[in-house]
Amino acid sequence: MTTSPPILGCATFTEVANGYRWGRTDRAYVKRLLDFKLQGDDVLHRQISDKADLLGMDDLPPRAWLNRLLQECAEKL
Image 1: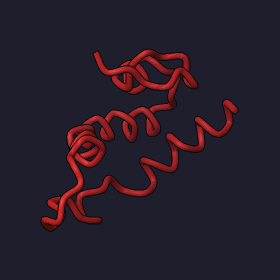
Image 2 (image 1 turned 30 degrees about the vertical axis):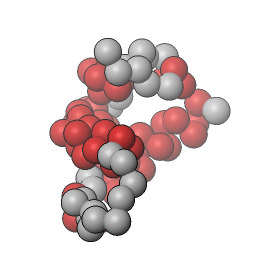
Image 3 (image 1 turned 135 degrees about the horizontal axis):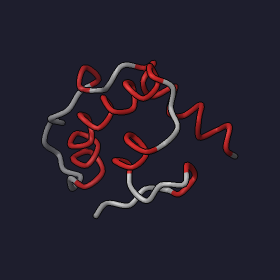
């Protein structure tokens, strides 16, 4: 089980996407972020090397999706 910071009161990011009290559009944004979890795990856990990166800026989710999640987290602080 992958844990998530408890700032939104959920143990995992899947719970954040599916169980947090988002509005309809925001829930859709956050659920779509689940599709990018593999890229995030790759970036965080791949060892640093001299080889070219496999992931680029085009592999990131749209800014609006991330901004909405970050805004919600900032409001909880």
